[in-house]
Amino acid sequence: MRGKEATAYPQLNLPAAELKLGRDDDGGVTVLDPLRRRRVRLTPEEWVRQHFTSYLIHHRGYPAGLLGNEVTVELNGMRKRCDSVVYDLNREPRMIVEYKAPTVALTQKVFDQIWRYNTVLRVEWLIVSNGLQHIVCHLDKEKGTYAFLAEVPDYETLGS
Image (cartoon, rainbow, N blue to C red):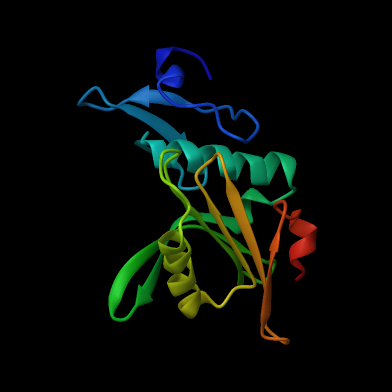
């Protein structure tokens, strides 16, 4: 990515991503989200999302066709959006990823948000990231336990 738009956002603890930037009618910076197949406003959270999904696809073997951004779930009668959901080959959800801007600390409140989404999707993998720090949690449904991991798993690790 080139230009002064790129320098407005911090370097992340993720590999660089090739982002396609543009401008909207109001002069705001946009980015082409290849998963949603449309341009969206480039916010600090979107900066993290685009880098993280690029990392999953290009460095961890996640098939782009099995990732969804801004996936709607119904929670307590309200429509909410999971930042990203990873699916298996049967299109069953396997992982939820929640993004925050790099300036937002990854607190218990942030983790509680993704935990609530998981009451609907019931996945085994949860990740929260502000682009600088990534918290990866694996839930063992059979044992009723969870463990935090040091790194993001490869897609093959998720199981089918």
